[in-house]
View 1 (cartoon, rainbow, N blue to C red):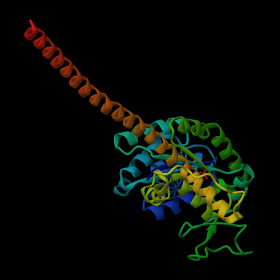
View 2: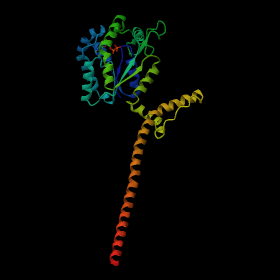
View 3: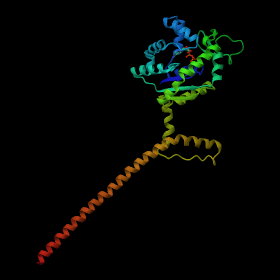
View 4: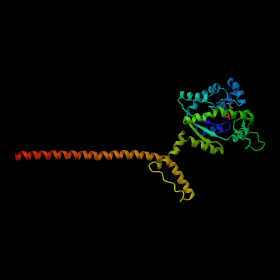
Amino acid sequence: MRIVLLGAPGSGKGTQAQRLQAKFAVSQVSSGDLLRDAVARQTELGLQAKAAMEAGQLVSDEIVLGLIRERLSQPDAKNGFILDGFPRNSEQAGALAKLLNEIGQPLEAVLLMDVSKPVLIKRMTGRRICRNCGSVFNVESLPDGVSACERCGGELYQRPDDKEDVITKRLEVYQSQTKPLIEHYKQLGLLKSIKGEGDLDQITARMEAALAPAAPVQKKAAAPAAKPTKSKPARKPRAVTKPAKKAAKTKTTARVAKQPAKKTGKKSAVKAKKAKKTTLRKPAKKAGKALKRATKKKTLKKKSVKKKAVRKK
Ligand code: ADP
């Protein structure tokens, strides 16, 4: 699996990337985490990135690209990766395509997490993170007065860029610089979009379904559903006469069957053409032989007539 998660700040890219990472044994590569780590370790790059991050602006392409290049060169990334927060503008998208080409690991899909603005703001303003283990919580779901991580007891803190004025800036930056990537990846045929609101498990399930053709595990699971219908034409749903449950089942089968049935249609058309050719060819051959026989007979007849005529003379 080699994918990019695209979406506004607060759309849940990080949370879902972690879930997919565990499920598919591929590495989450988060530009935000790489930057925050550099800031925390007070590296040269971290010190340069800090001001831009706290203002809700993008960190320079050069810094981010350096971090991503280094991260993708690590052995675990060879098994696949989930890019979260990168690319964030068209220059980064171009640089990523070049880099992945160089290492022979092209992107398989770009998954857009679609979340409405009010939900994004609510998520970001309420987000609290454990300083110790990095677990993410939201004040909405935390019991009153709880300020420690329920997993490790670590202190919960608010990201400096999760303050309301910085959030506004981040959303503006997303709108002007990152959103155009949706069209870019759509044109490349890589974009898949899912609704990023609702229950966490449901969102993960939607993502897995959207990625099904890109992920081999899903591919295997999807295959048997299509198999039995391959050689049969799609049955029309009899929803009107059947009880609701049965009708729904039939409907689904019909939907699944739609594509293979189309394929079968094509295949049988080719078969029919071939059959037509062979059936045409056979009588033609027979006819040819019969014609030869008839000509031979005729010639023999003519010869005997001639002979008779000579004898009479
Ligand atoms: P979010 O997606 O919620 O904004 P991130 O953790 O991905 O959170 O990013 C936090 C901040 O890190 C961004 O506001 C930006 O300053 C910086 N950042 C992260 N990824 C990039 C990137 N690809 N290019 C430039 N800056 C980035």
